[in-house]
Amino acid sequence: MRNYLVASDLSGRSDHALARAAELARGDDDARITLLHVIDEAGPASAEAEDRLRAQAARVVPASVALRCVTLPGDPDETILRLARETGAALILMGVPRPRRFLQGLAGTTAERVLTAAACPVAVVRHPADRTWHRILLALAEDRSALPVARALDRLGLVRGADMTVLHATHLPSPPTLRTGGLSSVSLQRLDNEAMAHLELRLRRRLRPVLKAAGHLHYALRHGAAPTALARMQREDRFDLLVTGARGQGALRRLILGSTSAEMIRNAEIDLICVPVGPLRKPAI
Picture 1: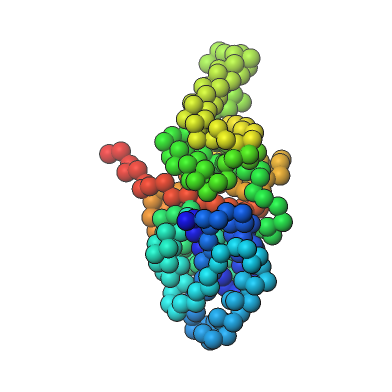
Picture 2: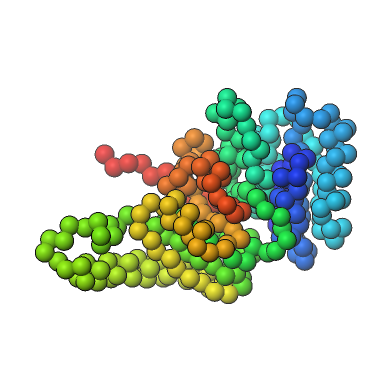
């Protein structure tokens, strides 16, 4: 059974996450949604929270989708992570973090803390689920970490029929930044084209077996920093979902893109899924 764990703060932001889970689960007899609200001192009392959670579920989720509502006391991120482990969640879905005051923001939001510690993929849902996640931007490194991200996406049923673009930002210097060494601009451009084509071929060979069910599969290789390339891609085209991976645990977890998870959550203009792919590599001595 594929279990979607939706963390709700009883706001409209979590309505989006719940609606997306319902859209993913609809038509899948093996899918179930667990809707969780964690009760803390600042929130409503237990009975009121349970009533509001059930009302949210009735308002957003069709009766045909299997769902159970859970209210638990405790620390929000720790409780979400514990229930994800206990239910074997395939995906944790959360709304975008609410604005925080500066001192509160130092500790990060619940979504950021869950993303940096979860053992399963985490979705931060920014938009209403009025259409499927069809146009997917898959931001990957050109190494073995690309495979677990692609496989996780396939296990969630998001690859089949999707219009997917694989984005890789490379640290190879672009021709205008190179010292010519006597080479003409034409020669430099030819060498760059060959290097980029080689990178793309390696990515294609690595990912083809996992992403073969995609409806359309495109590759976009860009020079420079990954966050810059990502922002440009989002401006140039309209995507429904950004998917990337992260290594490490806790405060050490970094997105493969080279940005912190918090920065990615705050800056992404579209829905985001982050997939854990293992520990950070130790630096060479």
